[in-house]
Each structure stands twice: as structure tokens, then as C-alpha cells.
Image (cartoon, rainbow, N blue to C red):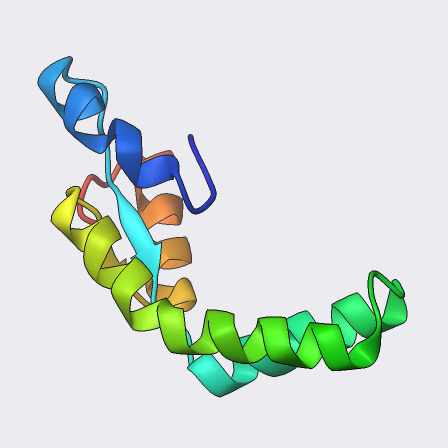
Length: 97
């Protein structure tokens, strides 16, 4: 299992080697992601609030391009609950969730 913004980089190689059970890019409401990230960063006092807001807006705007890139590398866009259902199905021996 690989997770993170760069996980899609290994999708094709894993597929080629027969190691890929699934590749997903989480599709979440952008506003919710912005608020979660901002709340986390503010609570951890990572930087000044103004910097965090500016950075958060930049990431909010970039998110569609990041998702498109991950899909271009072979990941399927899916909601978190769908990914969890599919992974649970794989663990239970049902390859299609």
C-alpha cells in the first residue's frame, strides 16, 4: 500500500509487475479539505495564520490539477468511503469490493 500525493508515481510499475490491486486518488470536497487543513495547521501553529490561509487557497486552487495528474498516472478518482469499501472487499477476498 502506498499513500500520499506521489503514490500515483508507482501505479504503472506496480501494474506492470502484477502487484496492483487498486489505485485511487481521493476525491473530496475542496472546501472541506481546505478547512480541515487550515484547522490542523492553526492548531499546530505551523506558521502565521495569514501565511496558512494564503497557502491553503493556493492548494485549494491546485487541487483539480493534482487530481487530474494522479488520474493520468493511472489512479481512479473515488470518494473515501468507496475506497474503504473496495479495500475491505479486497481484504475479505472479494476483488471488486
